[in-house]
Length: 530
Image 1: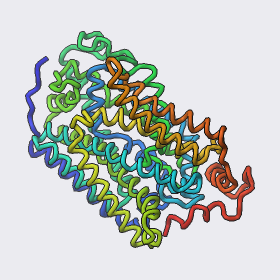
Image 2 (image 1 turned 120 degrees about the vertical axis):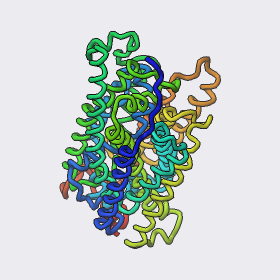
Image 3 (image 1 turned 120 degrees about the horizontal axis):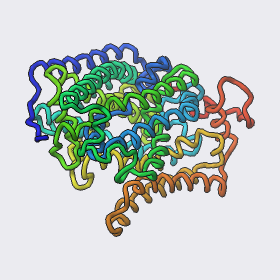
Image 4 (image 1 turned 90 degrees about the horizontal axis):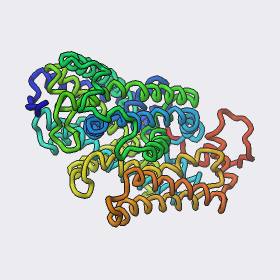
C-alpha cells in the first residue's frame, strides 16, 4: 500500500462538472416562475408532493463532510461511522414522522406561518422567539461554513484550486439557483442531485468491489485483514454508547426540524399525512443508502494510505485511484450535490427566520412588507447568509475551530439541543406547562453548559472532556430544565393552549381546551401568503 499520486481532473471530468452546474442554474431559473410570494419561496405554497418532500428532506441532510470528516472516521474506526451517524438519523426521523412531521406541517396549514420559528412569539413570547432565532442563525452560519470548507477541500484535491477559490465557486453557484427559485428550486435540484449521487455511489461501490477482487479479497475476508482490525466493531474509540444515545436524541430534534431546514420540508407538503409519508421515506433512505456510500470508506485502508492524520482525504484519494475520467467527474459532482443541497436548504431556512421572525421585530418597515418587498427581502437575506457562511468557511481550519469534523460534531451537535428543545417540545401537549421561563432558562443554561464542558472544564481535566460528554451535556441540561421548570412554574394560558391544540389536531374538531376568539390564524398574524 503506497501513497497515491494525485491526478487532477481532465477535460471530460470538467465537462461533467460544468454541465451539472449548468443544470442546477437552469432548474433555479425554471423554479423562479413558480415563486409569487414568500409562501412559495419558503414553503413551496404547501404544494410539494410527499415523495419529493421525502427525497428533499433526505438530501438536505448530507454534505461533503460525509466524504471528508466521516470518511476519516470510517478510515480510522470502521463501521461505527454508520452506527453512530446515519443509523441514529434514520431512527430519529422514523420517530419524528409520527411525533413532529404532522405538527410542523400544521404550522403552515393551520397557523399560516412561513418560518418554523414564527409560531414561537405566541407559544412563548417575542424574547424567546428572538433568542432562538438569533442563536439558530449564528449556529447555521458556522455549520454551513464547515460544509463549504469540506467541499472546497475535496475540490482542491481534484483540481488544485485553493481553498478560498473552491469556497467562492461553490457558494456563488448555489446562491444563483436557491436565491431566484426558493424552496422549489432547492427541492427540484435535490431530486436531480439524488439521481446523480445514486449513480456516483453505485459506481464507487462497484469499483471498490472489483479492486478487492483483483487483490483476491472477498467481502467477508476483508474484515480479517490486518488493516481493518477492529473496524467491524460498532462502537469504538470516542464513539461509545453514551455518544450513540446522545446522538440519537440530538438527531431526533435536529433532523425533524430543530435545525430549521428539514422543518420546511414538512411544512411544504399539502397535509399532515403527506408530511408523515415524506418523513418515512427519508428515514428508509437514511437506513439503506449510507451503507452503499460507507462501504468504500470502510475498505479504504486496504486500498489507499491517507496523507492527512485524520484520514479525511482517504475517499478523495481512493476515488482518483479507482475511477476512470468521466466517472471521476460524476463522483465529484456527487460531492457537490450533497453539499449544495444542504447549504441551499439552510440558506432558505435562515432567510425565512430572518425575514419572518427577526426583521419585523427590528423594523416597523419590515412589518409592512407586501408580497413583492417581502420576496425581495427574502432573496437579499439568502445572499447575505451565504456570503457570511463563506467568510466563516475560510476560517474553519483556524485554531478557534480546529477542523471540519470538530465544527460539525462538537459545535453543531452540542449547540443544537438548547436551540431545538423549546421549539420542538413546544409543539407537544405533554409539555404545555413549559412557557417562556422554561424555554429561555433551558436555552441559556444549555449554551452555558456547552461553553463549560468544551473550554474551562475541558482545559482543566486531564486528557480533556470526552467528546460524548461535550455533545450530550448541553442537551441533557436543556431537556431537564425545560421539563422541570414547566412543572415548578407552569405558564400555560388559554392562548398558548389554543396554539398547541391547533398543531395537534386537523380540521375544526373540538379542542381539548376552550379556544379563545383570537386564537388560531389571527394569533399568529398575517398569513404567510402576503
